[in-house]
Image 1 (cartoon, rainbow, N blue to C red):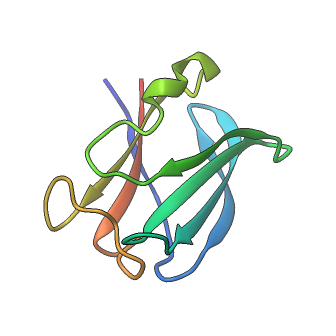
Image 2 (image 1 turned 30 degrees about the horizontal axis):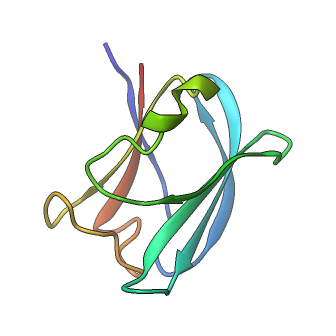
Length: 105
């Protein structure tokens, strides 16, 4: 059985935090890129803040970690929105109408 955990996010502001995923501590940084139509960007580092992956756009409905399975995150990171599949999380909607979940394998 997979365990699903919502990662709490604060809307309308960039943030940095640590989170435990599948028993390992990770550092995450979310920033909002205003280029084009705008989107949230995720960077993930290890517990010492050494970068592991950077520049992942928060796209809803897909596993954001799919191409990084070799790093052993132990699950999937998925964004959902209350308004429907494929919607891009808005600047003020992150943590309100857009949610980030870790699904442990």
